[in-house]
Length: 286
Ligand SMILES: C[S@@+](CC[C@H](N)C(=O)[O-])C[C@H]1O[C@@H](n2cnc3c(N)ncnc32)[C@H](O)[C@@H]1O
Image 1 (tube, rainbow, N blue to C red):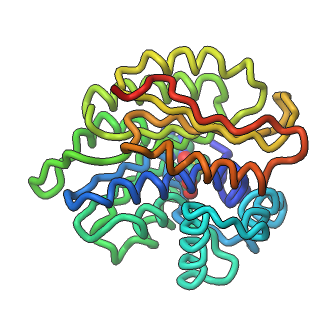
Image 2 (spheres, protein in one colour):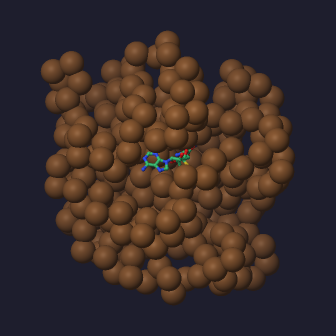
C-alpha cells in the first residue's frame, strides 16, 4: 500500500467528508443516549499542512484554505471551520484534523469511538494521539474485517443502539474498492441495522460510478442519501474532479442541514462550469 493521507489532507474531498461527518455527529449528539462510532480507515488522526507531503501537493489550497478564505456564513460550515481552529489551538497553527480527531471532539463523554488503520506507522501515530482518551480505541487492522468483528458494538457490557460507521478507503484498487466497500456496507447493515453508515468516494469519470450507484440503491438500508460536490467541469479519469458521500440511514433531517452547506461549499470551492452539487435520496425515508 502506497497511499499516505498526508499528501491529501484538507483537499476538497476531505472538506466535504469532514463537513458531513461533523453534521452527522452533531445530529447524533442531540439525544442523550450514547453513540458508538467506527472509523474503518482512520489515518493518523491529524496532519500538518506545512509538512513536506502536504506542501508538495498543495491540495489544501483548493479545499480547506479556499473555504476558510471565502468566510462562509452557513452555520454548518462555520462549525466545521471552528473545529479546525480548535485543532490548530491544540496541535499548531497549520494543523488539519483527520476524521478521528473530529469524531473525538464532536462526540461526548458517554460515547465510544473505534478507529482502524492498517498502515503500521499511521496506526502508531494514531495510538499515540489518543493514548490519554479512554473513549477512543485504536486497532491496527483491516477496517472491512472490523465491521464483522466489532459490530454490533458492545463496550464494557454496554450494547450501543445508536451510532455511525465511516468508511473512507484510499481507492488505490479503484473499482475493486467500490465492490469491497459495498460488501462491507451490506454486512454492516445486516449486523447493526439501526446505525448510520457513510462511505466517501472520489468522482473522476462519472460513468464509472453508474454500477456503484445502482448497487447502492439495493443495500438493505431504510434510507440512502447521496451528497456530491464537483469542483471542476472536467469528466476525466486523470484526476479527482469531485467527491461524494453515500449516507445510509442518515440522521433525521440531515438533508436540510446539508443543503445550504453544500451550496456554500460549491460557491467557495467550485471552478466556473463545474456542475451543481448533488443532494439526492436514492431511497427516501418512510
Ligand atoms: C483516505 S485515508 C483516511 C483519512 C481519514 N478517514 C480522515 O478523514 O482523516 C485512508 C486510510 O486507510 C488506510 N487503509 C488502507 N487500507 C486499509 C484497510 N483495509 N483497513 C484499514 N485502513 C486501511 C490508509 O493507510 C489510509 O491511512
